[in-house]
Length: 70
Image 1 (tube, rainbow, N blue to C red):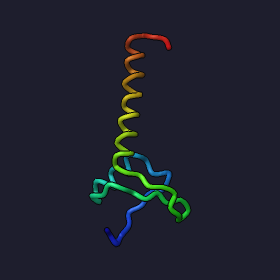
Image 2 (image 1 turned 90 degrees about the horizontal axis):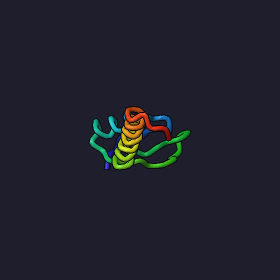
Image 3 (image 1 turned 45 degrees about the horizontal axis):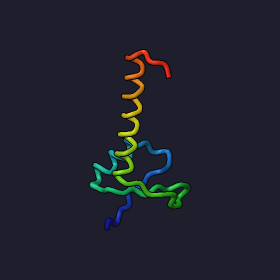
C-alpha cells in the first residue's frame, strides 16, 4: 500500500493513465469524479482499450487499401 494515492478523473486519456501507472509502478488507478470514487481501472483494462483501437484502425486501413465497400 502507498500513502500517496495516485488517481485520475473520467477525462484522463488512456495514454495518460498508462503513463501514470508506468511512472508510479502501479497496476490499478482509482477514478475520482467530483472527489468521489467513480471506478477503478487496471493496466489490463487500458491495454485492452489500446489493442481494440489498433484493431479498429487496422481494419479500416485494410478496407481502404482493398477498396472494399461495407
